[in-house]
Image 1 (cartoon, rainbow, N blue to C red):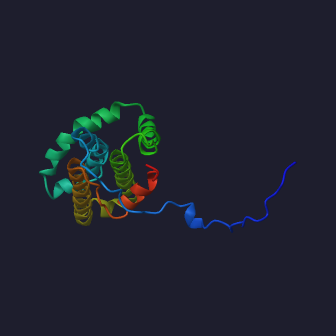
Image 2 (spheres, rainbow, N blue to C red; image 1 turned 135 degrees about the vertical axis):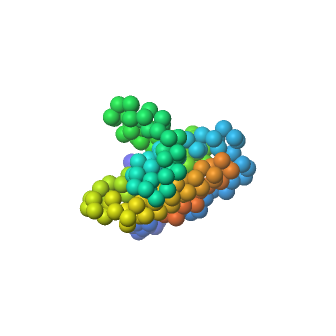
Image 3 (cartoon, helix red, strand yellow; image 1 turned 90 degrees about the vertical axis):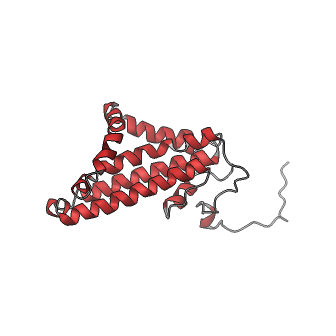
Length: 188
């Protein structure tokens, strides 16, 4: 025979904010991660670092020394170009599901992986949106200075993220860090 306990109060509906993860700040770092974790945290930043110059070709007209940087990233881009067309999609899903959403990896690594992926997406979005700009603006003097500013801002943002990873810190990039932190399950 089943008996019902009617003395318990029934709670009301849950608030919608319970379903959405909110930014609670970076978890406290009790000690600096080991050197191999800090080095591994820099790997996800190779893609946005090399893709920066794919979209900034017009910046060469202003500062020709940027071609030396492209020479350094060209082997990496050649290697990526030789991979199958489905590799980048597999890389994204593998990194996201295998590292970012996996609690067995340290929070420090997961944060830098998702930050690198978001920076890569950001540079691709900027490049795609600017493909819609008329060529007269894109290749003119305005376009050269525009891409020079975008390229340097993005380049120094990625370099700052790499510096933070090597120092064992969380990178604090406006909007990107908040979005990165929200992708990582908090129950670690």
